[in-house]
Image (cartoon, rainbow, N blue to C red; front, side, top):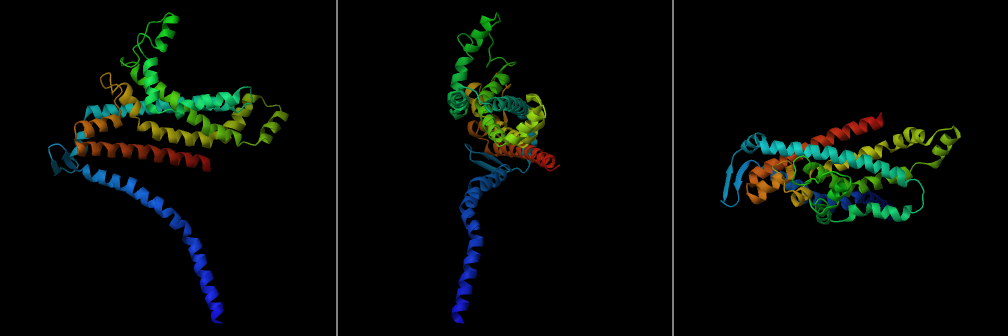
Length: 302
């Protein structure tokens, strides 16, 4: 009798351990998330309520004054508008071009295996290398871009120093580097579509464009929405290309939120003010992401 009770107790203990093992396995990741993400955000919000001048050793409570001053700063408003413009242009260009390339590489043709790695290569390069290459391409006197314009009878353009073209030039660099990411995600989605759908459509006499419109794009819609969300989040925090190629100029035509925060926090050492700007940036990204994600899930469920 005692042996039976002991076996039952051991069995129950083992079952309870197996039910809780996934929680124990998630514990290290949860601790890292709390330490490296949640705590810095909370501490950043705490600093944003203070006038924290690092060099002068000033640390005084000012409440919401940093936020009120921030929202009245024209340069900060300009950085928000520039960032939103960059996000919309870069995301739209990458998704459209990435979708077209995914449809192309989903078709079997000679040389596809050699061409696909070359197409994905820009995504694998460090951003500083990408920026260095494009600065050379954009050179006013000897750059490839202006050589092409001269060949067709057009004058050279100051791609990075003309306010009309500077932001668009950065968008082009981002499209070149990150379109391969969209390509890979959508290509994976295309290859998951069963062949019998296309075979049935061919039997019914559907043209390739009709199959893309009525089969490919509806099934691929979730992947497209998902990759749009990822690129929106990533492009919103653009910093490295702006810092390396234009420094926010000419004037402030390429000033972004990340660069504004960097300058206030690590050049002028107004850490409280920079913390308030970073909280505003976080709220903007969260708002856009949540609104888009909710709309995406509603359309999928519908």
